[in-house]
Length: 311
Ligand SMILES: Cc1cc2nc3c(=O)[nH]c(=O)nc-3n(C[C@H](O)[C@H](O)[C@H](O)COP(=O)(O)OP(=O)(O)OC[C@H]3O[C@@H](n4cnc5c(N)ncnc54)[C@H](O)[C@@H]3O)c2cc1C
Ligand code: SF4
Image 1 (cartoon, rainbow, N blue to C red):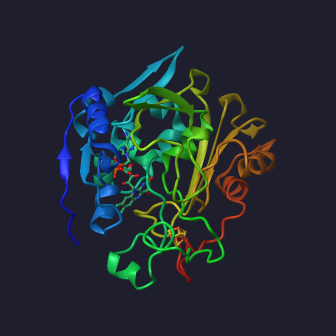
Image 2 (cartoon, rainbow, N blue to C red; image 1 turned 45 degrees about the horizontal axis):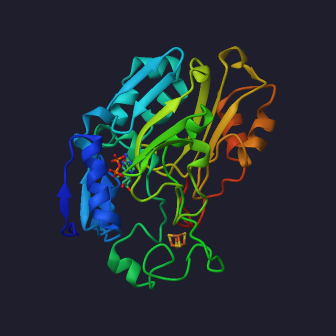
Image 3 (tube, rainbow, N blue to C red; image 1 turned 90 degrees about the horizontal axis):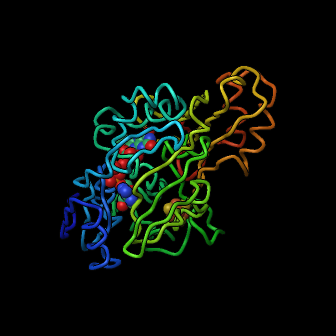
């Protein structure tokens, strides 16, 4: 499998990147670490005319903390930088724990926070070579009209598979976006769409520039449990994170949840995470309880597992 030919633009500032987006329109696709996008391009899932390589934009590679403003992480911060940050390990342990489980050391060195939040949704019938997909006639997400996971469905059920989003949801994070038309900030809880095709409430020409976590979430304790087939290196099939004020860390009266479990959007405090919060209220926190509460309805799903796979 080889990469399709395309033009590559390497901006050094955010303004240069925004100009390129304005000039080239919908034929442009952004790439950061490339650990997700490049293999997908080799599989023929994307064939952009222009690749906008964001890695040279140094101004988006930062981690800052201010006791009043909270935490800000640039979209180009690498996952390794997050894992190695003593500040994040001490003040935002749930994010630190989640980042540590992503892929392998090599992929964490290349992968960025922005790319992790904007990961394409995954599915056994989609993340395959063109030859493999053609044998089924494609599917709704790519080159077809049927969903092989849910043949009666008109939507795509490919699953969200990033590890940092549920942790950031539990911490009440917001996402900063910039486009040629201006910039805006949205709660992460409103950023994802439960549709494997649309997946994010983000315009094609919007760059994720940073993530902010409120100062009030600093020092929260947290716990994280991830279900995957290969323990050494694998995307999550499901994951559950809880975070709450440290004084409640044992018998948890108030905690925020971030959950994803084989569907297109991760959930913050709300939706299925509410049942997790109810299940945990007043309970001593332990990994077993957490996974039971947070991932109640995880059964290995047809979009991520083959029959007989054991997580
Ligand atoms: C074998 C393997 C195992 C993996 N395991 C895990 C895992 O356990 N957990 C996990 O979370 N991930 C996993 N990944 C996926 C990936 O390595 C990480 O999620 C990584 O953080 C993605 O970041 P990136 O910068 O490489 O993204 P890229 O591949 O560069 O981009 C991913 C997507 O985000 C978009 N994008 C990138 N940056 C921006 C931005 N600033 N603004 C707007 N859009 C943007 C791109 O257009 C693309 O659609 C795995 C990958 C592989 C190959
Ligand atoms: S969930 Fe259905 S439409 Fe979506 S990628 Fe999988 S098979 Fe295709």
